Structures are given as structure tokens and as C-alpha cells.
Length: 296
Ligand code: PEP
Ligand code: MN
Image (cartoon, rainbow, N blue to C red; front, side):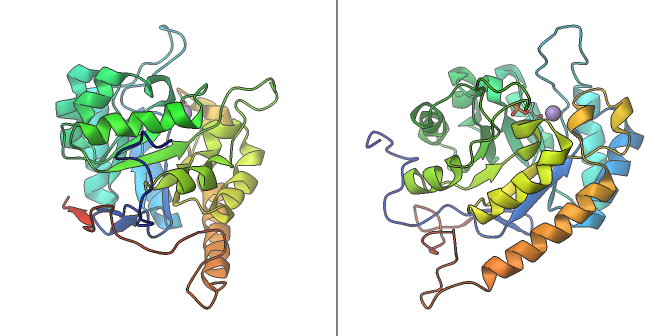
């Protein structure tokens, strides 16, 4: 993939993106929250719980890409305002999806990171528009995308002038119907081999099954993921989207403990050159040698 002029890995340096206290691409970052922002009470309850458990960032969709036009589409601006409130109260930066080129400017006033969902991975107009804003973007892998197709998408954002892209593996469509998607964990070391960008894993959409989230989250960390994105809901049975795949706050709390123990074990397993098991080259800094900081 030599044609990846900007997203391709060249000199071994990796991009690190600072958002508040977070050093994305350097420290393991866990993003958690509801699938959709449904109400202030719901989002604040979940935000407080994930903060207590040790999450570094809050997620929540205000614009939802739904298969059916009759399903809940998200609260829009009202949802963004609720996220702003949760952010102000908990201190957690927020990530939220932007679906439409026309919304990029004002969604980026509320979001610390803009999310481009799997269904929009190759929405090239959206990618070009996001390339013009001064906020990092998380680019989820399309459910039918090859690695080459996926990696050309950050190339659009970087080429348009935004240097801070995070990749997120969220499962691909295969012949297996028992899981919602097939989580491709090979994508983690593969993306790290091919690109300097941080790589996250979403075991929630990647499996669609609560009982698979913990083992797949652990496996993702062991494979060298820079972070995880996990859906959490305090009343999954009432959730307006993706309730069946949401962890309860207590389950998320247990998961955080396990992830931290695993991370400690990995940190303790560096070799004489400081090489961490599964992490590859431990050289940090962005491709252009600067770590960019985002005040928030
Ligand atoms: C989401 O994270 O809210 C989402 C819709 O995920 P995906 O785009 O991966 O389906
Ligand atoms: Mn969801």
C-alpha cells in the first residue's frame, strides 16, 4: 500500500493525539457510554457510572444511523447539549457521530472527537469536510471494507488538512449469523504494521453479544489496541437502540478492573529494549514529530 502518502507508516513513529489529559495512541484509552443519548437523566447516570469505573471518554449518539427510518434517529442538537452537560459535570471528553456534511461544523463545537460510523466510512464528501475541522476523528471500519479500502479513508481526512485520525475496528459482515458481526482482531496488528494512526476496537458492535464483550476486549488489548469503545446502559431493556449488546455499569466496572490488570501485566512484560509484548515499536510522537494538544 505504497500509495498511502499520509496514513501509511513510514519511519516507525506513531501518532499520539492529546485530548485533555488523554494521550491517545500512547496510553490505553477506554471510551464508554450509551449507544444513543436518550435523555439527560439517562446520559448523566451512565456518564457518572463509566467515569467512576475509570473510563477516559464518554460516547453517545445524538445522530443515529438506523437501518429503518422508523427507528429512533437520535435527539440531534438536544442530544449534543446533553453530552455537553455530562462533559461539564464528569470532566469526561465526549465522542459523538456526525452523519451529514451539513452538520460537521456545529457538531464539532460539541464533540471532542468526531465519529464517522461504519456506514459512512466511504462517504468521501463527509471525510473531506471533516478534514477541514480542528477536531480529531474516529473512523470506524465499514462492515464490508478491506484494509486497503479502510486505509484510503483516513488518507482523505489527512489530505484535507486534519492530521488526527483514529481507526476503529468494529467487526465485519461474514457468513456467521450468531454474532452481529465478526470482530477482526487481526486488524489491530495489521493496521499498526501499515499505518502510524492509533487503532481502537469496538467489541460491542463487533460481537453484538454481551457475553463476548469481555473476552474480546481483553484480546484486543493483548493484540496491541490503543483503546476500546464499549456501550453501557443502566437499563438495557429500555434502551432506544442496541440494548441487547449493552453492558450494565457493574459489568463495565468489572471489565475495567480486568483490563487494568491485563495492561499492568503487559507493561511489566517489556523486554530489554523497552518493547512491550504485542505492541511493536515503542516510539511515540506524531509522524511530523509533534504531539498535537487539544484544549477542551
Ligand atoms: C456507534 O458506535 O454508535 C455505531 C453506530 O457503530 P458502527 O458505525 O460501528 O455501526
Ligand atoms: Mn450502538
